[in-house]
Length: 398
Image (cartoon, rainbow, N blue to C red; front, side, top):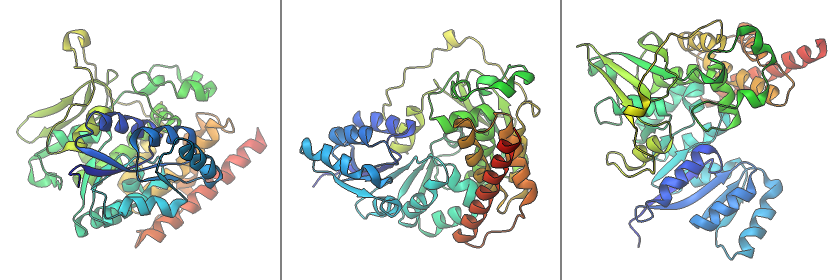
């Protein structure tokens, strides 16, 4: 019987999933892929299955499940194909699984990630929406089921590396004064404000430092992503929004910092490559090779820092307000943003209107304290419906 750790990769065809498989391929003596999942990209999922030979492949969109099965059968690949949302949870909570990479983008990742937590897995969290939407419910489940939660976002992983080496962190007991959350500023950091109205999806997705999917690239361009990360950090490290300072750092070399009450500031540095935090979390508390090139400080030469411009990035201000309000406010923020970003990518909504839709939804929906997951999901759906209505009204006027 193999001693290799069994891993399920949720969102295998996305940028984090692809990077995870790259790291895993470098350590086949340590890890065995148990399951790979995707939404619709069955051709790429088929190639991944042929290379990694998982026991299961999950395709959420059942329309192409037969195509995937036929392709795998043609190559005599033994991987069993499952379909539907329930199958995501099935491969997350399976008794054989040791680790789960939670890399599904958006609210769709909440249920399978929570299933992994409730099964006591080591969960590598790239799906920040799980904590944004249901932070209290999620973190209680981590404690109750003795799961290990390790952050994959480069910023949260950096913070984690700047804290004592433990998976359950309460910074109140560690002498932490504040967390400095770095942000590149995205592709429009210096764009004249008047020009933002004309921004295209292609321009918004052209991030200067990171290679990411379309949705997170747009979130980075609006800096809503940094706001979601701020909310996530509050839950991960048990801090208040006021203890987190967002700092624009265009080089993306320092991934975040932690300031202690004695005046020490610890920073985690490295090239902007997601394989570093992935490798760190995979092997934690050990270290393994990631394939990332070494950081050349002489070439880097300089590191710049500035405060965020809230006129340029109103989505960041909206997220900070949601973090301070708490309750269902972050879930409402996230849902409205997902709908608005989808409308922008499909050219039904202008770039600067993303913030307007989010603000209108947040202004018009009541915030309550969620008692359970269904409460969170109801707030999510209500926000989505209102956002879609606002977008249709906006399209009708234009």
